[in-house]
Structure formats: C-alpha cells, structure tokens
Length: 421
Image (cartoon, rainbow, N blue to C red; front, side, top):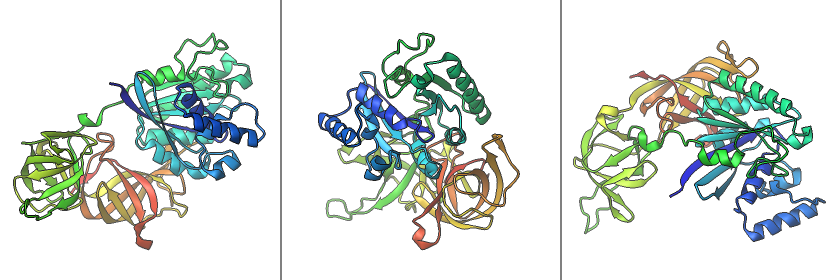
C-alpha cells in the first residue's frame, strides 16, 4: 500500500512552477495521451517548438493566453512508493490568498527560486505563509540552473540565504535541490551537469519525505454537521449525528462530551453508507449514535472528555488578511470554525509580521491585503477550539464578511493561546 503526500508549490512570477509540475507529471507518466496531444497543439499555436509542460497545469484560457498561473491547480500523480496530491499556486502578489488555500492542507511545500535572481520579496512572503500555516517540510527548488551554467557557488549562496530566512521564521526542515524544470535536470532523473550535487533528485526526496504527524494521532474531534431524525416506520426513534471525523479515532463504547454545550454520553453505534462500523478514523464521514438523547445540534464538537478542546469566548489569533479592504480594530465579522459560525468583533490588532526584517512589529493601525498579523477577537457565542500548534485540523478558522450575506472570506485565522471562558 502506497502512502499519500499532500504538497504545494509556490514561488515568484516566472520562476517556473507550472513547468516544474508539468515535468513531474510527464516524467512520472501521469499524463494521458490526449492531454499530451492537446498541450502539443497549444504549444505550436503559440509558436513554440519544445513541448510547453506548463500548459498541463495552466488550465484556464486566461492563464494560457497570459502565460501565468491565476488559480490553484490541483494535480494527482503516483510512483510505485507514493501517491501525491499537488496544489500548484500562483506567484503574483495579488494571488497570495490562493497560496494560503493551496498550503492549508499541505504536508510539504516546494518553493521555487530563479537561480538568476535569488530570493525576492515574494519568496519571503510565500515562506512566511508556509511558516504561518505550519507546513512541516519545505523544499527549495533552485530552478533555471541551466541559465547560470549550473554554477555551484550560485546555488550554495541561494541555499544559505533561504535557510537563514527559514530559520528566522521557525521553519524546521528545509532541503535544497538544484533543478532545471525545462530540461528535467534533477527533477525525476539525476543530472550529469551537477556532479557537485550529492543530494536526492526532487522526486526522490518527495518519495521519502516524512508526512508529518498523522491526523489519526491527534485527539479525537467530531464536528457535527447535521442531526438525522428520519422517523420512518423502520427507524421510528433513530437519531444520528452526521459529520466527518476531523482528527483522531472514534470507537463504539467511547465516552464523549459535546462542546460547547457540555452534554455527555456514550457512543453506541457508528453508521456508514456501507453499514455499521466499530470505529472511524480521521477523514471518514459517518453518523454517530449516542446512548442518551442530549441536546446537540450543528456546530457542536464531540471529543473524549480527557482530551477535550477549550471552550472560549475570546481568541488570540494570527490572521493572514486576504481582502482588499484593510482590517481595523472594531471590525464586526463572522468567524467560521468547523461547522459552527458565530458573530465576532476584532477588538485589537496585536502585531504585524514585517517581511523584510522577519520580526513582529508594534500593533499596526490596520492589516492590509496579504499581510500577516495578530488580533484579539471577541466572540458572540462560545467555540470549542484547539491551538493550531497542537491540532492543525481544529485550530484553524475563517474570518468572513458579516455584510452581504456573509459570503466573502476576509482572512485565514489560526488559534493561538485561547483564554478559556
């Protein structure tokens, strides 16, 4: 059985992200013949001679016409030892919000740097996003090495500078690989033009990189999506709690507590579309049956009493601001955590990350688009939350615009050290 690795790519404009992803798909034989033929036709239509592998991921017409990536492109490929789910993120500053989306579920990030230009501000921004979201493993792909004659000192200089920035941001694991995505050097096959490089190819590293702490190892969390009461002739008293196990393992016989309400009961059954099951691990959607008919609705979280999340009415959080309008203290917003959405007020901005110094500044007057900073948020109703540092699956939330029906996402938020209510 192969393991699964979720990864994302990021980098500045024209660093070659889409070409690198296309190269991985091509060299792992993950492209259908009709797809390859379509890319060949598109390449020739643009006057190209060598196959433009970037077109495998740049799927939108606007992207192909402009030669850039706008949306997050998800691709899947496999090797004999591992299955990969890859999010190719755009490089433009205005699409940093897309990078947040792609990195939010990633266990590894590949950050590209153009060997001719080295680290730029957008490189620091993307690395800060990876640190913000606590992506546990980062690969530096120094691309376009063919344009600097595969010069080792150039690679070593970029490697050292990137490692220093990563260390300042608290990124624990960084591996650097010199590559040429266009020609395939050190992507899936080792390049004879970098005999001075003794490390793995990019694909070799992706095949053996740790996948981080698995969700099943976290404390059990089951956010309730829906209460099912069909009241049919065959099930007159059926009452099930439908949802998806966010982390940990839920078993029949477990004592559970529902938060924030505080009701307690015991699991007497777990139903699936395929029939009853004795247990359900993280990622599985099930219906939970409890011994007692306690008052539980959408937004409640089931947990084991001895490993319960904190119930809070105020959050100390870190935000990545994704909206055009700045965030200021006093803003009224919605906070969506799991299956629960509550009204809230941002009472205070507590700092901002300076991407040049990589230090936290004094509280700013406002958080602008793509900035990362701290905030204190007062909740209208209690939430059952974990610190993002201890449980990535239930420590994140979204800040949503309270006006206009609440459909506009304003920020990605991470729970810091919540003050218990």
